[in-house]
Length: 249
Length: 291
Image 1: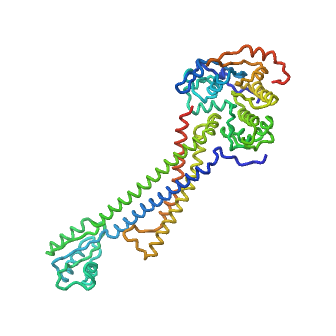
Image 2: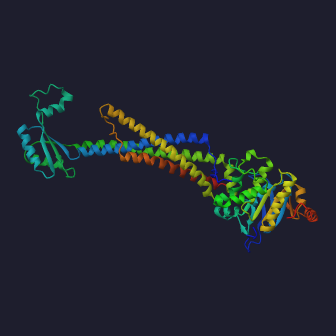
Image 3: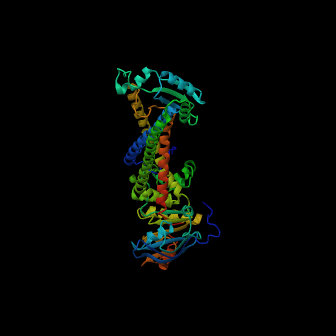
């Protein structure tokens, strides 16, 4: 966990060029979005409910194709990639879904280990890492619990552990602290910051929790009227709160 | 933590899979029976035609017993003829008994002499050769080659065999279609799991493999049950026929030999492969619809 995995020629982790998105024949949800996230950057995405934050994130984690424009990851335009190449890119992206998307028939441990099974890793090789990660998010005693028996906050922590277990190059989180208490929220933010700082993981977090945004010195992108703007004010406030004792990074 | 067996990524669908198991098992039962019928019909055709191949009956309308013996002598000298026998009066009476009763025929009724001939089945034009030789000797004759009658039987059996094979093909196709439909339903029901795996970077063949394994096992199990039921049904038919004196009338010969057992053994394997193929094609095609 000490070396960045980005190739030297990958000077951009995420790039959106004039990206628009519409579902079926409705109006554009997102319009002419330009965005560049450097490797190792940490950003927030804010906006009112229904502004299109989740849709924008879906474009970033390659769940949707843009109606117009180009999405590039690690310097590679994704529109002409083969399905296997897209899968390879997705493996470098960890996602915390707003609705968690845990598999109900699997235990917390197996849910966290899911991306490792997809990678073909042997259970004996990753067991200790998964247990340690679950302990770190406070679920060391809930390894065998199935999601329906977990609280919302616990499910959210399992979802976060699953997103970071492969130590992805990009971490995309949709309201990752929406169901946890402030103390756990701070702890999870520390995990994101640690990943960002130690592994140069590019992190983008969608949230409308302005308190969370103010805790970190990071660029804030705001979706409004289908457009994406960079919000300078929040970044300034975040800079002023850099000395917050709760966030050492 | 003690090492535990990994939970399958696709949860077991008890109700849906039980219904599918029943349908596939029933289709395999019918397909195995149809395949056994096709094989049995093939065996019967082969056996019947082998029996009559090379057999001829020569009818001598104007000859008496001595004339028949002369004709037999001429026939015996033809190359390829293996056995020649003149029918006795009693044998001719026995042949006509089903039509004229057991009291025999009046001596005044003119009957042709009959000569039974067994020849090499591969000898060419045996019927015309016998007729020509007898004509040259001044003996009027009519030669009946049994193989001509066997040809009709063979054609009927070939149609029956073709019908059975079409039934097998249709049943296998139906099983594939049913499994494809069930896979699609399972895919829709487990869209959440497929989406998560897809977004975690699982390749299409990884996801398809989950469904393939599931339906491969289902096909194997259902096929085994269907094949066992077919074995039971065939055994019951054979038992019933043997209990009634071993005669199956015009039905093909009933038996269970090595090749019948091969059919029963490969039925579940074919069912498994068909299920696996159907699942793979269905999942790969469905995944093509998502990014």
